[in-house]
Length: 423
Image 1 (cartoon, rainbow, N blue to C red):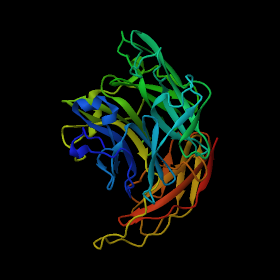
Image 2: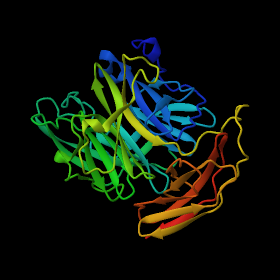
Image 3: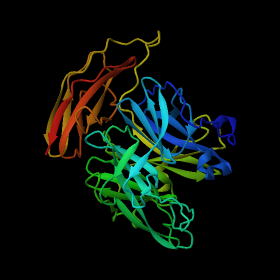
Image 4: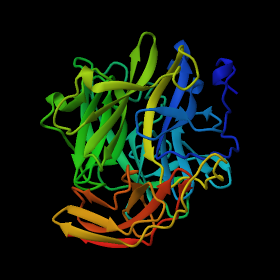
């Protein structure tokens, strides 16, 4: 237990068995802390929230917070993986409630240490393997005293920070990784500039390229690559490469394909506590102004108190909800059938998907997979009962598509997968 925390924030030192059943399409992991205790990661607790629209968030019912800091959440199958400092992963099975907390080893880092990394961000590759993005942070030695891994060592005014990716070892279930060839990002920081630190990478795909956010204290830099494990290039259209300049750091990004908008989440300190904010924007080429940001999670908004800080957002799309309970007696819904087969029309990198309507449906959710049977990401849910959707900027390659029908009482199983090839 973290006895230093108030009653509202008492957390388990390891995840507790908890049957959680998120029902909304978006998840966010974050850590919480109080006042001066926030400066020590051992005083942080990991929480999980859900949202229907990315703006209004509430804690997932049944969630039991556990000790951890700077979390990153990703789903594969029916398991949620929470990567936190220091070099551990908490795994939750959404069907059974089983959970554990185990060390994570990364082989092949320049220092040779398997835990010499911080600030995890995860992505599922085309083969359904977890890919870990992180910053190299060598452990202290007699010749290298402890220092903030985000900044330069004590007495050094200018230095470089390296960000790597590592791919999951098959069969390790997210606990063992091997560093991929090359360095994803190398960036120079200096105590004489506004870019004194570099940390907290966040990886996502925007339909045409991979985007890597990097936090520079209260600011966010943008780096992109056409391939997941490529060399990422800093934005040349943003001043100093910064999307958010002094308006929030420790970012998490998502590209909402249905509206062709970026959702950027950061945390920012205001009036003595830290809150999570979101900006919705159509491009990564224009800096975000203060008016672009809206608070989405505060300590008070999730029931923990106005004196509590919420920090380090990590956004994820819920691949599919847990099995639904029977509808309440007051709910009245038409019998819901599974949607019909999906067809697709491809024009360049724009794909229009059409499917057979489902009896009793009030809406549909379309899921796109990066490999047959795995890696599905929802593009909705879609409002209304339209039976088609146009998705722009679909990358070249083979993609699997499936659809669920929904109404007020639940949702169906998915339609048969359809594979579409984009040239």
